[in-house]
Amino acid sequence: MKSYLKYLKIIAVIFVLVLVAEVWMVNRLATFGSKLQDLKEEQVTVSLQNQILQNQIAEYVSLVTIDQRAKSLGFDTTLNLDYHLSKSIASLH
Image (cartoon, rainbow, N blue to C red):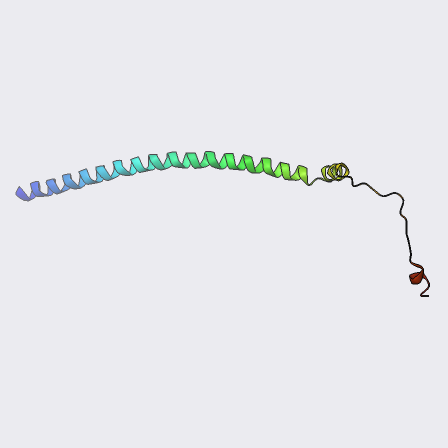
């Protein structure tokens, strides 16, 4: 009978330890889930900002934008070209 009580006490202590460990693990998982949700929200925000930046880059490097910027800086297409050849180069034949 005494050995039965001894085993019962050991089983009770093990049960309490397992119960405490389970409560601790559930608490850790709940905290980790909250952190994971925060990271997912941050990922969505960064992804949206990345898409905005990609759109801006595409706009800035488009040929139409570059052409407008070049014209605003004074660059334009040349219609009449004047060639000036040196007589010394032409007389080398």
